[in-house]
Length: 402
Image (cartoon, rainbow, N blue to C red; front, side, top):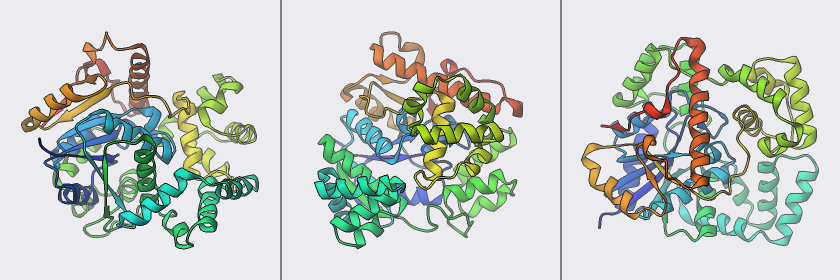
């Protein structure tokens, strides 16, 4: 039986660093095939993906991924813990993925595993320090880092301050807590830092690429930081004016904020009552989501956490990421990997969806989540409508095959 490695991605967009990670994942795990779980049209930072999920699937397949599965928006727009939990459990539900390889600044598994086990145990001392720092108004990431520093070796706090290390630790926690039959591997992140906005020769973060595109930069400059088969897709979408951005959803955010009952906002946004009030007050003074974010400052909430809350309010997505995996949706596959797709269909512990028109017999919970996913995809295209693009019907979307 062939070995299958899972990777958890956003490909927003697919760049040279992703190509390196894909190659290293095959080498580190000895896998014959790679299945990617990818965020759909909205990503973990709480914003729309720069191009839609089908074109990002095309990028991934063009560059060597064998099958792309969609991570539903419930988990795709969750905290790092919820994102990792949903993605790992989805990989486990395939019953064919035997390993997971993730990039990290650390590049070593043992220190990450030590922290993951420590966080899973959550000693009384750890909980008390965390609670005390949160009560002082500190953000959760900062409070947790202090609790780790006090209850582990001091260098552990430095490890958990790096974004890819954080996600890697959350993947390990999900595997430990769920007792998932997936062997974890990590490879050291190369090139530009996750939050770097510089376009360096040969490497750039996805954030730097998005900033360049949104700022009207010459896409020809991206030839050194993106594989040709990926850049070609991005250029094609740019020519069609199909580049999405956060502020496109400003009218929908304000509408949702005004029609959502106060008692539901906490469950959707995950914000405290005081923070909800602050957000609503700021929204009355500013229209663009980016301006609302700038003027809703808080020591207790990071910029990204607030952005996620705003997007969840806009989309009406409840902040419950502990739901069971109800189905596996395939966005695309490489034609020469049809055997792998058939193997997935035969082995998966939940229904595998390749055609939305053939989903009438789904269980109720699966049907509800799929309906939510279709509504969110429609919302993504509503964000592009002012740019002259027609709304797409998810039921008519075809599997991406390369």
